[in-house]
Amino acid sequence: DTGVSQNPRHKITKRGQNVTFRCDPISEHNRLYWYRQTLGQGPEFLTYFQNEAQLEKSRLLSDRFSAERPKGSFSTLEIQRTEQGDSAMYLCASSFPMGVLSPEQYFGPGTRLTVT
Amino acid sequence: AQTVTQSQPEMSVQEAETVTLSCTYDTSESDYYLFWYKQPPSRQMILVIRQEAYKQQNATENRFSVNFQKAAKSFSLKISDSQLGDAAMYFCAYRSELVSGGTSYGKLTFGQGTILTVHP
Image (tube, rainbow over all chains, first blue to last red; front, side):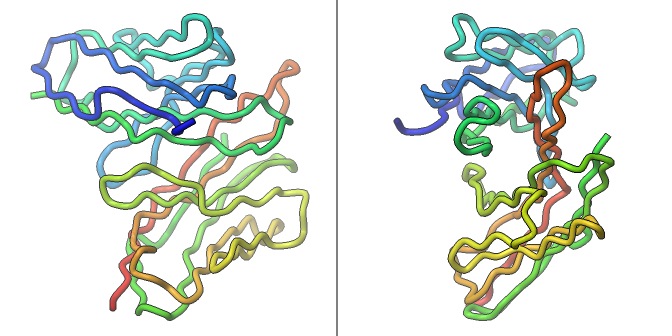
């Protein structure tokens, strides 16, 4: 297992366009998190999946954002009608179930979105 | 809601010297985890060290150790024998162990980060 992977690594889009990012977690991990990180800041939580169920969403996740995790494997994060303020690094992380083994979250390399 | 504060936007250290990065947090919970993550430039975030709040003993991982003061809600990271490869942005993060409705979601709350520069 090579860790958490994310695609694409970079995305440049024009304002108003829709974009979709993909995250492939570590295969043994049933927990998957999305975070957003703006330049020079710490990541901020967006949403959480346990298997295929989306159990928590941040207030940061406006109606233009939607996330899915079909069959509890990979996850996608879609942003509709992108705005310049959506420009950020979108990070995916995965972890073992709570109370099982180590509690750490393992991060992917991120997808850097630039909205022009 | 929990908050994490890193009051040092930037720190620098000479190679082979020791540096300490500060972190404070605010919580009303008694059971939680604290982490230090490292994010090198244009590279992904990796875990440096973790501390369980119920453990009084400070965690250590090779050259990295923490000073965990639960009552003061302080969690500093000490890097000994600094190396050029230690240069990165360091984030302190908090994870609740609070069980809500039988489930604990485990999201991380991060500080603002500290940029560490290592001089040869």
